[in-house]
Length: 283
Image 1 (tube, one colour):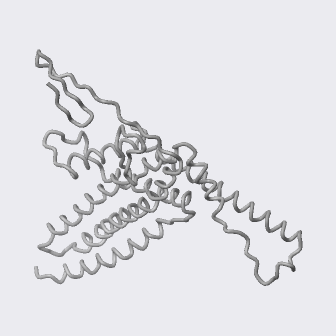
Image 2 (tube, rainbow, N blue to C red; image 1 turned 180 degrees about the horizontal axis):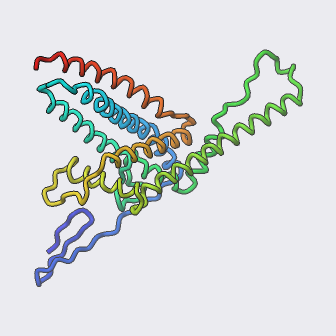
Image 3 (cartoon, helix red, strand yellow; image 1 turned 90 degrees about the vertical axis):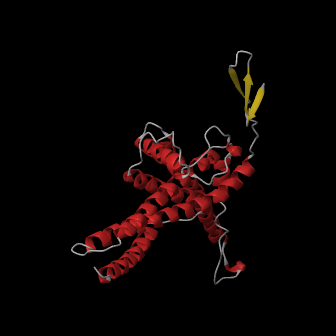
């Protein structure tokens, strides 16, 4: 008797014992061109997901900083609603963080379809992808543009100086790309180390996401629930990784601190208006 379950074939013997045979995965070769195209698709998606996580975090932090202290000495019937909103933001932040560090365990890179930090790290380490991206970065400068002079007015010495400056700029762009990729891989490796503080934090967040957020598994309680400090630590690492990948692949200098400041200022303004409304509500 044979039953099929994906790659698993379950044979029932005469003694009613099951023998499970797992067929080997079919592996395909991913060429450098395809891997590079995937990198270019993932990087902006990863940056947008981190921006979303930053917004969730700052809205939650701003409300905690403004509303509870501002309600001291006041009675309100909306405590449960406030608590529900904050709880929803914490759960959303947990989902946001889990998503940017997501990947499918045991799958080869050509079957990974998640725009995440681990998958991007796999792609950076595929074949000559890193060197291809470094070469692409050296072409970010389109060339020297001359202003206020005709071609014939430039001396050979001036032309040579301009070409030397252009080459130096191209080499610097390539070096910046290579350095950003290497730093990105360091961040990924810190989180991938299952015994590290970062790896343990991610394991708690993933277990919570898989067993309580995405699913409600009655017989698989998370071994340990994530701490709020896990979310903030992983968010900081995600911000660093997204900024490094944006620099390496797109030549963008992304400053998440500016976004953090804008989000916090806007969220505090909103929280102040909510607080004012709560104070005006009848006791």
